[in-house]
Each structure stands twice: as structure tokens, then as C-alpha cells.
Image (cartoon, rainbow, N blue to C red; front, side, top):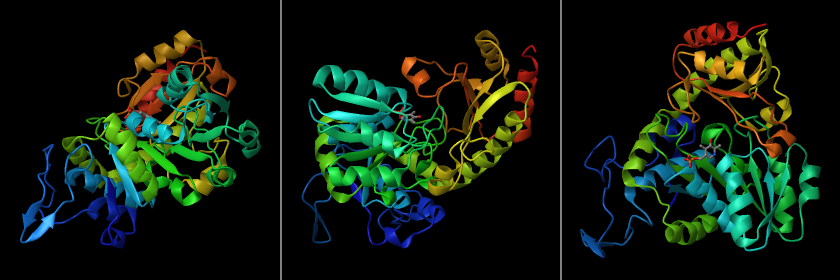
Length: 391
Ligand SMILES: *Cc1c(COP(=O)(O)O)cnc(C)c1O
């Protein structure tokens, strides 16, 4: 559990925060990169130069390496503090558990991440009687109508990560607050760089750090950002009791990833804009889903909330399901895999169920991640694949 220090608050821009929040060269013998405190236990009290140190006790609660990652993330999102977790699902399930109780009701954006939907629709529903109403999320009236007397949580994912639906965070927070309903968002798509939900009144912003924040496809990790009271409560309840804390080595890799997040995102975003434009103009492509592109259907929300794009998008190629699957297999640079946010380009066909269909996910959706390779190489790869789809 780490809160921002006065020193951390001197850094304002994302670039400076990523590079320098948490630097304490004096404490770490001048090391430019902080050490990995690969220890479970901190003995207490420790006398250092006559001063009793009681800050750390046990790594399930806090650890100096993990603290640095948490302070960078809190500074980027403008929260009092942050908590790191062993995975994105660790952060998301803890944030949800903070607000729900047995037999309560949740308003849930229907196009949220699959495991999140599974957690609420199946796990919490079957074991604890939690009920839910699925919403598209594109109108505040729809969300207001879904609220019931026992609603404890409105769960958002904006933009969502398959069809990139956005929700009006400010208006939804204004709806929830006076009714005592908690608000949680999965902010993974935007990263802490491109959207700061707490500034719009959302209670908890969650991330998987396995995607852009880690950035190298070498860690599974998560984080959440909130005010002091919520951070303290989740630290000593959901995280300490469920034990889904981050490991110090994971934190060290996350810190390394965060240092280059601004430059990586810039490159991913520039390349992806070109790829989206290429796809939008391609005769073998039916529809493109990419926030901020010419055909994106929620430009007002994009302009209100997001300050940049990234490499993730989806599109519907023309053709049968078999032809679309063959197209994905024919790509050389886009490996067939379902994660995203690393250096590598990926392509995957997206499965669909009745709920997803009802809330606007089309058949034969292909999601791609535009990696850090040369963009012209990637466009040529897509072109050779699309050209093989029969007319
Ligand atoms: C991958 C992902 C998650 C889950 O994160 P893990 O680190 O794999 O647990 C949650 N939300 C979104 C949007 C994701 O893409």
C-alpha cells in the first residue's frame, strides 16, 4: 500500500512521472534503478541511526519495490494512492468485492472483459446471490433505469476491449454518488496516461498491468487507484486476506515497463492510426472499431475523455467464418494470440455469445494488436492476407 509523497507530487507530466517518481538514490546507494527487495519479512523495530523504522513488516502488506510501482501509477492517475496485485483480475475482483455484499445488485457494462463478466454473472451470482443488469452503457438514462434499491455497484469498462464502447464517466459518477452506489472502471485500454477516471468522480480505476503498463509480455500483474480510505480498506481486507499481492520481482519489471510507457504508446498509437485508416479504406473490410478513427461512433466521448490512442483495434473482414479464420492464420507478423499491449503484433478471432451479440458485438470480429514493428511491414502483411479472401 503506497500513497503519494510530497516529493512525488513535484512531478506533473506523465513522462516525468514515469521516469522519476519514486527515485531515492540516497536510500539505494546511488543505484539509478531501485533494487528488488526480494524478501518476505522486515524485522521490527529496526534502529537506523537512532531512528526506529516501522514502515514495512511483511511483503503481503507492503514492500519498498512494490511501493515505487504504486506511487508512479497513483501519480499518473491523480489518486491518493495505488495498490498492485498479482494480476489484473486480482485488482478487478478486489475492487468489486469492496463494494458488493450478498444478494446485492450490480449494473454491469455488457461488453466488459470476459473474466470480469464471469466473476459477476456466475461466481458472485451463484455463490452469493448477487444479481446484475447488463447495460450497453452508451446512455446515462439506460444506466439510471437499471438501478435498483439494492444496487451497490456500477461496473464500467471504457473503452471496452473488443468493440470499444465508451461510457460517460462524469455523468455516471454523478448518478451513483448521491445514491451511495460505488463506481469501478476497468481503465486498461486507456492506460493511466490517456484517461484519469478519478478526476471524473469514479471511485476505483483498475488496470491489468500485463498489457501496456508492463509492455513486454513478460509479466501478469494488476493495479488499482483510489482515494486514501478505499486504498486502506482494500489493502487490509481484499488484498491482505485473499493474498493476491504483487511479487517484488514483478514490481521491478513493471517499474521498468512504466519508464517507457509514454514513448511506446506514442509509437503504437501512430502506427495503429495508419492501420485503421488502411482497413477503413479496404474493400474486403466491412467495419472497423478503433477509438478516434474516422468511423468510430462515439467521437464526443473520445474527445471528452481520451488524450491518445494505442495499438488495439478490431474489424470485420468480409467473408464467411472459415474465410476470416483462414485470413488470421495467413498473417506472418501478427501472431495468433489473445493478449495485447506487448511489443508484438497479434491477431485473433473473437468468440461470441448471446449477451455479446445483444449488446453490439458483430459476428466474425477479428481483434488485432499493432505492435512496435515497422508499420509499413504490418500493413503489407494485412494486405496480403486480405487479398486472399475470395470476392
Ligand atoms: C487482460 C485483461 C484483463 C485481465 O488481466 P490479467 O492481468 O490477465 O488478470 C482485464 N481487463 C482487460 C480489459 C484485459 O484486457
